[in-house]
Length: 109
Image (cartoon, rainbow, N blue to C red; front, side, top):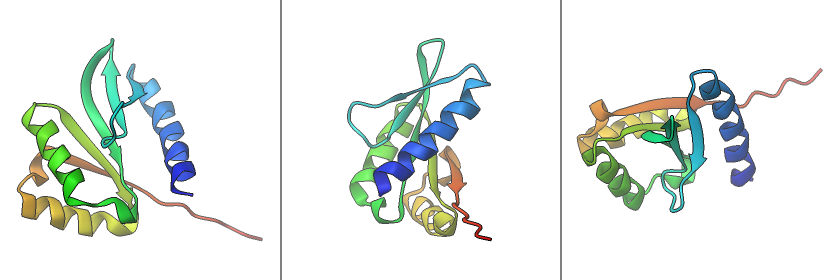
């Protein structure tokens, strides 16, 4: 189920970033899930996180990417934004990470 959710989010991100002359490619060793390219140059990474995927290994990888000078965007469920902000604050990397959110709404007649 999480795989399909990530695919849906990636589809929408590609649509949005395509208008900004940026491309998304899958990384060979996730996390992070995607790299942002502009004219074939890596300008940042996007990591799509579900509720169960906030682990110390993932945070270590985020810290490594930030130390290499890359821009990092983390996309989390809307309900988890506060939790991930607290985790990033404790790790001391809050100001170097952008946080995006997603939410799925179903409307039935």
